[in-house]
Image (tube, rainbow, N blue to C red; front, side, top):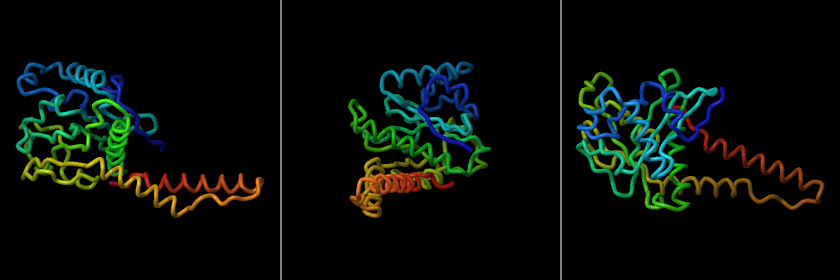
Amino acid sequence: MGRKTERLTLDHLPLLPGGSGSCVAWELDPVRRRAARGHEAEEKAAWVSTVLREWGSCGRVVLVDGEVVGHVLWAPPAYVPGAAGFATAPVSSDAVVLTELHVDPAHRGGGLGRMLVQGVAKDLVRGRLGSGGRSAVRAVETFGDSRGDGADRGDGHDCLVPTAFWLAVGFSTQRAHALHPRMRMDLRTTLSLREELERGLERLLGPAVTQPQTASRTTGSSHARAKAAMRARISRPRSH
């Protein structure tokens, strides 16, 4: 079974599972949400287009055998007026808001959610190392759902993910709340962990030993394959 993630584009929106392509609880304030009833998909596409144009990459999809089975979205707080409605708002000034993460129920339990979160961190870390406004981003924050499976979802917070999931994939509680705690993942910690794993890999394998020319090609090739295999094991998402 082949699975991979790729950056979200407007073409992906109609393919998102679970009707997520029309959820605008984060993107619009309550007044605009009421005005947009019946046109949510168009509003969602307009929002994604604006963020892509003005800020850059704001989402990823995960594909299994070529089929979109999940996605994640994020954006700076200025683009997420719906976040102001939470008791634990506002989001920290050095963070982006992770607004949605959804995996089709038929594909849950295989680590795809963790894979999407890792994709968010990777995109944002790369953005920090580049140029533009992303250099100020130090963390990802979101709001957890601690209401339980049987809770009434009539409060407008239908696009939330259980708090337990965020804790399992590397977030910590930034501001506690009985229903909607604000969760945070520090990119500096994420980057430092990756660098530490890379250094450990180098120490474990050591430098390639200089050999006569004929043998060195074989040794160097084996060394490279061993490194690649170890990196794959390090980055492979665990089942969740």
